[in-house]
Image (cartoon, rainbow, N blue to C red; front, side, top):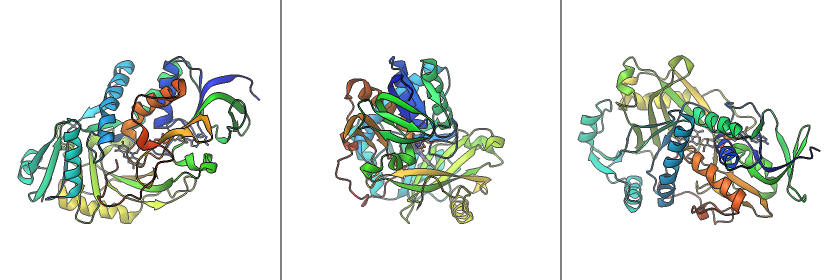
Length: 390
Ligand SMILES: Cc1cc2nc3c(=O)[nH]c(=O)nc-3n(C[C@H](O)[C@H](O)[C@H](O)COP(=O)(O)OP(=O)(O)OC[C@H]3O[C@@H](n4cnc5c(N)ncnc54)[C@H](O)[C@@H]3O)c2cc1C
């Protein structure tokens, strides 16, 4: 047994854990981060070049939280001297009167966030890259953009280390003994003690906390990349983030071209949806030809100059039934704090969740409204209005 007692042990150095480690270490806590793989690995949910950041949600509490989340990302940029957040504006479009568009507009209005209805002709005039959109309802929101996902996680972790956090890679946690006087973490070869334990284990959270039987489902998701000949027309200053709610009840979203082509960059397009349920330890990491063909067919109709996908990648969602996060203390041990179930739309909140976890560790409470994320809430099966992840 290592006799040192840390103020906080963070399990998992993905998007959430790295942010939590940064906020904790910055506030002076003695922090240990345990990661089962190497930092920056591609087996979880936070890898890849980009993630959408947006205010638009059909649930107003997310829009409210995003006000601080944007500010936290800007802070991170200023502290690190890196450009991590790019604003492109977004168009959300679908058949006239589609309920997701209406609910989203209401939620933005309630939060005092500007947005504008366009008709399809306005969309086609402003962004002629889109074809066949003349009959659509279009919601324009100017603050949407994307985060450089992998760079954000690396930056949080590096800054955590700069503030004194210790990061141990290739150190899987096998057990959390929260019944001990001081919570004790078991790894393959060691034990570590922490006054507080922060569980940010992504798709593995349910396995690590089996006693809680958390309502988490891990699904396999895929994204396609396009590298059109005239890439200039798809740069972030000329092409927006977009989301189409299709007549089949699907959401297809896209993020402007970003990243070096030879390093896997390009314009990202994907279908949000309930992918196949899998175990996080054994997903098939080879993208499905059928999925790529489905996205190619969409692109052929909507943005034909993109051509065909050049490559695709697999990523994991960890979903709750109502698609809302879990941010709460372990019901049997207040010293174990959990942030999980980010349901395919959590990345934009990492910087804020990191701050919230640090406040929960240090003060036992946070001023942010996290009641929708309680473990013991009545989890409703997502239904009715189809909801966008991403
Ligand atoms: C295809 C795709 C597109 C997405 N698009 C968007 C988007 O546009 N916008 C958005 O906001 N969100 C998006 N998301 C969601 C977002 O990326 C996730 O919600 C977020 O990355 C989750 O972060 P996390 O820290 O919970 O998980 P992870 O980043 O996976 O981190 C969990 C970490 O814990 C480690 N770990 C697990 N178990 C153990 C253990 N026992 N011991 C030690 N370490 C352990 C893992 O190895 C991993 O590093 C998308 C997700 C996917 C998959």
